[in-house]
Amino acid sequence: MSGKAKLFCIPYAGGTADFFDGLVGSLAEEMEGFSTDFPGHGKRLKEPFCTTWDELLQDVADHINNRLEPGDPYVLLGYSMGSILAYDLLSENMLKTRPCHVFFASHAAPHIEWPSKQYYQLDDEALLEVLRPKGGFDKVNAELLKNRLFRRMFFLPMRADYDLIGQYQMKRDCRIDLPATVLYAGQDVPPEEAHTWERFLRPDTGWYDFSGKHFFLREHTEEVADLIKRSIIKG
Image (cartoon, rainbow, N blue to C red; front, side):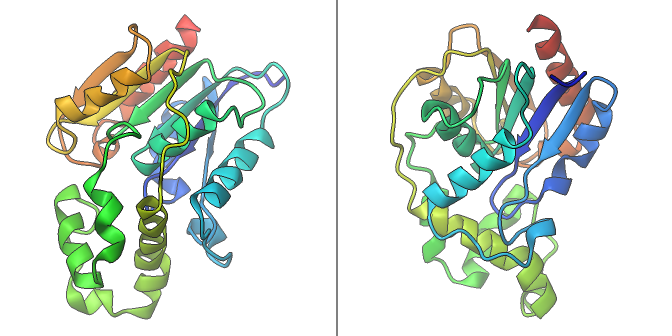
């Protein structure tokens, strides 16, 4: 068992581990942070993309399990697509041990037919247009979209992830009997969509509506860090 609790972060579609750098840095004194890069993303850019959801799920499970030692207390945080991966990891019992707290951020529950499940059908420019309101690609134009380096580093990983989302089917409908918190920005995920997680979570689940868009973590890093600290103390 290591000296600190651990934090495992799972990113959004097209995201990379460095999205969580600010959060991990804010928690450095209290926790040891580990963020996932999916195959073909970020530091794993040279690896082939996963072609099935189950392949990606196993990859994330391996990333976490390989860093867990017996008795390690840890927190699991899934962001957007990462929230659904976190749910599947827990519902399928794929982790060595259970986390002391799980955070689901920026996504509706796994049984909902999200609009993003149809994104794989869109051409590049149409996909870019539906993503602009989320705040991640709002400054990308058609010219940049043609840039080979930009496409390989940012756009193609995102397309690969939406291909996986398009094939997603929830395997198990079960309650996650763990302390949990749902984080969302009401402009992005309306409260009624965020609360679809109630079907899977305990009555003592915490709910936090942040200002901003899909990537609200960038503006609210310290608030989220504080919630994670409090979850460890309660644990």
